[in-house]
Image (cartoon, rainbow, N blue to C red; front, top):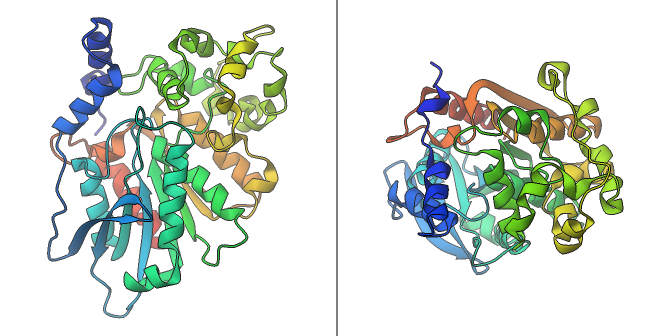
Amino acid sequence: GTVKLSSLPRFPLLSNLIHYLGLSHHLLVLNFIIDSLGKKSAWSSAQVKVTDTDFDGVEVRVFEGSPKPEEPLKRSVLYIHGGGWALASAKTKNYDELCTTLAEELNAVIVSIEYRLVPKVYFPEQIHDVVRATKYFLQPEVLHKYSVDPGRIGISGDSAGGNLAAALSQQLNQDTNLKNKVKVQALIYPVLQALDFNTPSYQQNANTPILPRYVMVKYWVDYFKGNYDFVQEMIVNNHTSLDVEEAAALRAHLNWTSLLPASIKKNYKPVVQTTGNARIIQKIPQLLDVRSAPLIADQEVLRGLPKTYILTCEHDVVRDDGIMYAKRLEKAGVEVTLDHFESCFHGCVIFASWPTYFSVGIQTQNSYIKWLNQNL
């Protein structure tokens, strides 16, 4: 059944209240709440062996599913957790359980990457971590150690982890030295751009619980170690106004009036400021970096990307990031499955286990695993 949005956990609202009262930084509060849902130690079962180790200095949690009798080599997924580049962990209960389920149902090896978080490190360190861990894993001797089939490796992630997964795929695709190419990428409600905070989904879901627009903009600013003074201006797109020359060339890559179907555009109007604040991009040039915003990549970069799955949710500010990326990948000749859920909200895939058991969590998780099973 569907879930009333009013019944969802209102973590950001609580953390912002605490922040405004001056009790703590909102990211620290959110991480405390997420940790209170529980971190799990590496616990193995008869079906899945779980170990904590490190790949070239990057911590990872590895989930080894049982091999199929007829297939000595296993499939593998490199998983990157969400949390606004600042929250959660491979060890968070919900992510640990998701990766255990993937390992069990796909008879696969799942590598969940414990990249470093804001405020310990900032962009692009998170990307460096996931690239380093991935390249280490793709070495023939490491794949051999884990009995992984080099032709059946996928990259996946949710939310900010979907952002890192998309950036990782683009980097690997352009790396001519890489012998083993990735077979698929599966992006769950990925965050893909910070140029337009007034896409129809940002307008429609500006005040939706879990991820209201101002919280998403703050995550971006935090990722770049920027200044909160810019948040209100960024919400109205003053950072990419027509007088900001650096943004002009990139606008076509996320022109939602042409990239989105009419059913999504509805009656929303683009928010394009004639004059804005050029200082924002000067102070935070990372906003226009393709490694932070995979949606703005050139067509040549998108060509040759692996077969792609993108899951989007109706009640989610970043819904249109995913839909536009699917459209651009399709135009570049990439095989894409866009899996859109009308009754879902941001974060629903990890709400598939107690204490946040939602039927939409089960539904989206099953759909995602089914696609991986058929395509990896």
